[in-house]
Image (cartoon, rainbow over all chains, first blue to last red; front, side, top):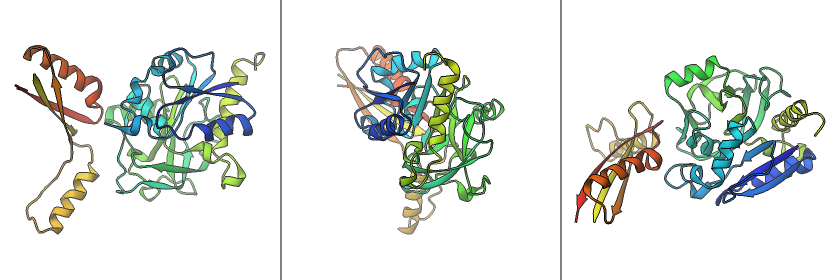
Length: 236
Length: 82
């Protein structure tokens, strides 16, 4: 399976993502500079974490107009997979590929620690390797991670199963105490209606090897590879 | 030359922890009666060689496209000539 990792000026998690895709999963992962206008035939694009364009104005606001984003939008329209992690999630929201926005944490602090998230929907190309309700231990590392969306859209997200991850206790309970940043309804990750675009604030690529203290983030990457095989068993 | 003063603020109902922190600090300093503080952004966009009407149109588009995010923010602007 072919992954393309979009690199903006200020991205800083692209090599971690490439490491996981190539070294842990044994798949191909190209780094793509944000000035590229045409993309090769990728199965999955990753928008990695970092501070694209310095996060000036708003997180993701400038990156959303990088030349590569037109091709990213076409990839989404064609049903290709897109995974936005942390800053990548913020860029996808600004681009309108995902609903909502990420605001400053209510805790008045930059948060960098492991949290627990519950898998709310396993019927997406990103979560087939998870059990329904499975609790993943993954790190977050952000200042603007408070998910916000208007009430009408929130209802739609819930009805259509687009909320994929929620901050939870280790036992999988959705509580205020388990919500690190004040996100609406403990939302940590959402997908689009077509379920081919996922954005999440936690960093699954930093929880993909035993050495790093958790491997539950790997489940998301394994799901993607699995869905690629299912889509085209001969070519991959 | 036309200067557009652009104000971008969080929508009503969107929690502003930064504003709330500033409000708390003002209270600590002894300023009584501060009910609420909202922190926003103020931008000055200078345009050259356009009419007032055209400037207004362009700044409106700038706000819609980039300067404000309609999901979370409201905007307004004033034009100043000279």
